[in-house]
Amino acid sequence: MSQSLAALAAALPLASGWSIHSLWMRRRIEAARRDPLTGLWTRDAFEERARNSLAHGSHRAVLVLDLNWFKEINDTHGHAAGDAVIRATGRRLGAWAAGYRGVAGRLGGDEFAAVIEVSGEVDVHHANVNARVLELIGSLERPVPFEDCDIDVHVSVGVVRHWHCAPELSTLLRLADEHMYRIKREGGGASIAPAHEIAPTLATVHGRRIGRRGTTGKEAS
Image 1 (cartoon, rainbow, N blue to C red):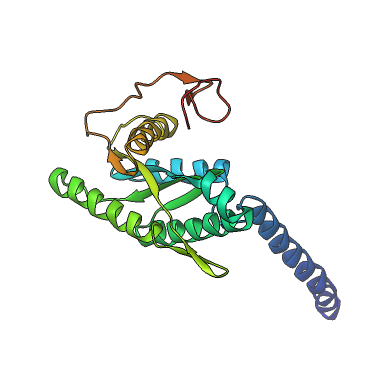
Image 2: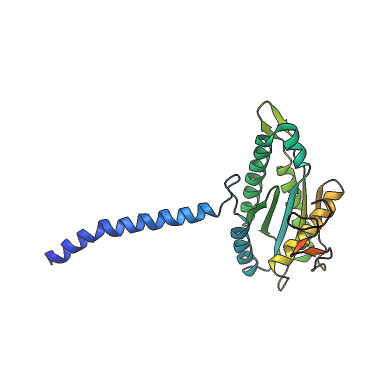
């Protein structure tokens, strides 16, 4: 009995050490999947969680958003100001998505995405999505304080409503991206895809809307 207790006592520090090491490794792995500027999930980590959200609920909204005139912010105020705007946008988007049991990510540059829960009834569903998107825009377009000035922020948001047996995430993101692009060309705001629209219509290169970074299209991204 005493030998067993001695062996257990000897093993406890080792077990504790492995537990701490395992926790440290998990935190390191999670940190590597977070965007360092905003704290949001990176593209791959976001898509993993977004697919899981879509798989476990039939009523979701998928959003893609982009900052308007972001290059002008960098050119006028400097890249530190641009970073401040990206950081504030990420934090505001993350808080908004969490409020609706959703997930948000930074896809790259000034492009973000989110998936949130919405109600199931058709009429309520549409009004519900409209209200939540307007709430998001109101949050994101609050001026961002930087040094001795407030930087105006403007966004364009494309939204797709997700129903049971709807297309997979990559198709939903491309469709939301198309609507974001259309409203961006009109000066910003939000564009929500009709419920019957389930497939992208614009030309794509390597699975992305032509004109996006990484494609050879001539349209502005």
